[in-house]
Length: 315
Image (cartoon, rainbow, N blue to C red):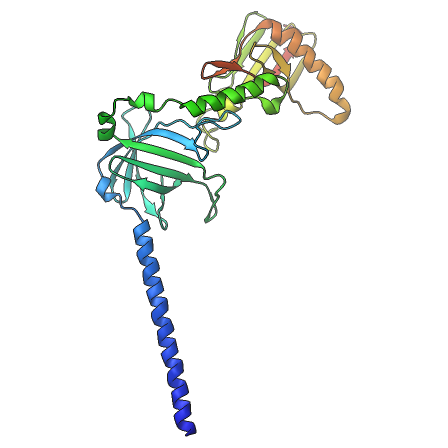
């Protein structure tokens, strides 16, 4: 009797184990099937030219609160299931990239990570992902790119150039940011950057001004927007009251007037340095430079410049 009971117990254990294995196998199969359903195929759209018509943040806006703007400019073509051709904006040159699938609808190409939101022969939307190691940074993965196929664009009454223009909600947001900036022309935190940055030009032989240009090596680890978010000028003043060299920021308001911004110095020297820099701004820069304020969507507004100013007493 004990032998029979022992046998039944063992049989039940084996039977339970087999059921568990079956359930896990089914679950794994179901998961694999779901994964395959989520993985889009590029084969059906191979050879179709897609043009980017809208790039925006997850807010739906093309602008953020500091003036960074998302601009649609890509022209792409999936040449096969695992390859994409990306054209250089404004030219017929292109680069070919391999596509590697991660999981679900996540892919990697052009040294970036992407999620396919939707994919059709007429249009598609991609989400650009920011990764922290193997994890997606949800806060920074907030850029979405909408594409229309060449054939679909030909059916529309609106041109590609018009589709790429800022929308009404962008204009309203920009107006709000400009109003905030212009109401606080001496507050760096309220300023608004622009691709149409402040322009400085010399109107005296005693001052030389030059906008800093970044070469390709410097921009490798920086966004292409760095140059307009943080515009820098080198200024040399001849026949100055003394030899000096200072780095500081200024705010240029909507009227083209300069206001001293931020600078770095030991706390005990802050007030004296502020007086010196204010004098340089008001006596030299404001009077010897032609200053054109920044504009966004045609509206002038307060914006920040970063200056390196050298004074030469000898001249």
